[in-house]
Amino acid sequence: MELNYKNAGVDIEAGYKSVELIKKYVGETMRPEVIGGLGGFSGAFSLKAIKDMEDPVLLSGTDGVGTKIKLAFVLDKHDTIGIDAVAMCVNDVACAGGEPLFFLDYIACGKNIPEKIAAIVKGVAEGCKQSDCALIGGETAEHPDLMPVDEYDVAGFTVGVVDRKDMIDGSTIKPGDTLIGVASSGVHSNGFSLVRKVFDMSKESLETYYDELGTTLGEALLAPTRIYVKMMKSIKNAGVKVKGCSHITGGGFYENIPRMLPDGVKAVVKKDSYEIPAIFKLMQKKGNLDEHMMYNTFNMGLGMVLAVDPSDVDKTMEAIKASGETPYIVGSVEVGEKGAEVC
Image 1 (tube, helix red, strand yellow):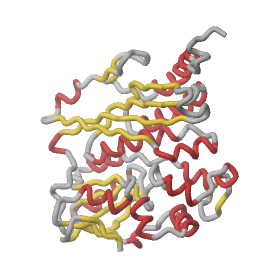
Image 2: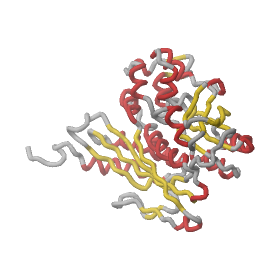
Image 3: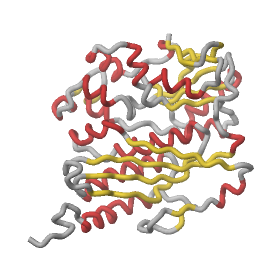
Image 4: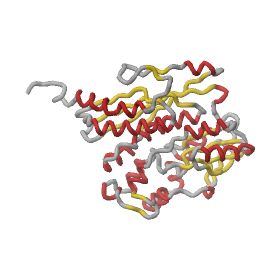
């Protein structure tokens, strides 16, 4: 047999086909600043608009979706995992008060199956649309012998911008400020190594319907991460200066909430201030998990926690609701050693 790239395990034609299939989804994410089309060696984006800013600051974020991706393999459902990849990056940029401008994705796979790659990128494009972010480039790498043929990994990064005066850095947080939590859509994209130990990851197990979830276990766990970019824009447009913002990812409340705090204050979150989603209760019961570990691993139903001045609470709550998200007043900032308390 003549040796060539295809029988070495890399199918260039499949690569061309997947590019053709994804063009439509990518096109739906375009912004006026995007220069050129898909297929160049780099993505180009005009920064002309930021000349109106006094002191423009570029923000960036990069992430993957962790072992949540294993559920997509088991359920053979690949069109939402890309939303998670975008969410993990753009929510971090929004946390600093920034507007994500563009996104690039990276998919590594054991074998390029064009329809599967297109489904993944469809999710990435949907995440970009939800955050008004242009998908200006990406890479699909076929890795024979490195990854199993039916597996892949997806990651990405985003670049955003904020005027320095509008940055959210937590420096003005003080005792008496109010903490507002914003509902998550479920487990989001963190803690899945623990989730996979609690639940059997077979197709049969994931397709089991639970009354308390109102859906199958797989659908509840695979629910894509909420994207809070438009919400943060809504709050800003309402004239509220958010003092601090935490994206509740891996490390849960105890690791992420203190990241927005200055020294000398602590965040006190009241457990009974909102209804903890059924998926977390089911997981805690089934896995016999310690409550502290739950709050130290998962978002427990809050994807973001904001610190605002008490005089801005009503305006903030209204702006969050107007953007389609669900806010709760979950606690306050008090004098103490920097950290988070859940009580």
